[in-house]
Image 1: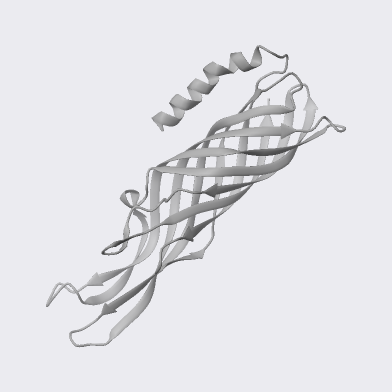
Image 2: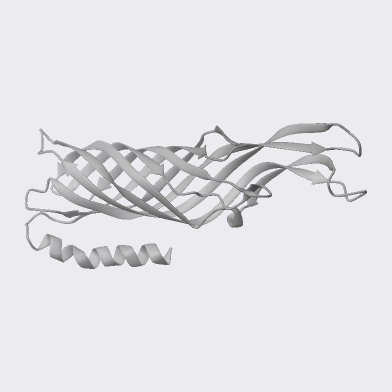
Length: 241
């Protein structure tokens, strides 16, 4: 989180150099974005098992590039609540000389990140009171909370720990050690703005946040690391002041 704040502060300091060449104002606003989040597995034996709903809220900041106001450097600071579901093939013995049984162990991830988006926003001229835009760039996120609902095996204490007695369901289990700190993503979006008056505008749009770094920090087998990518699609409603 400290790294994200340092980067945002650096951007704020650099803003006057962009703004000095034109008379288009810097804009600040707030946004709220419900999202549909999913996991993509790149590890054999570990599968995506469904989507989860989350939300993002945070600060928007835009700095003009050029005098027209049609090109902007768009950043901010977001709190992202995302997740997804995965399932893992699990084989086990329930008794000595018993048959080998199998079961899928499902995990629902509940992750929270601080995100610093670094994007370019391309806007049309005003048509009536509307301006349309496309947006593309990079997102740098830092995990601040990781919990999960999951099914885990419970082993016999004797005669050996290798035999599964039963399975238990854990809710809101802390899995911070199983999630990597940093997540990077490609951000692609589009939308429109409606100008009420002066600098006050209502923004609405759709954004796809495509994670391309591994969020998992655990083993699937003894010698196999898990690799999970987190993506989400969000609908954004925001206000510039």
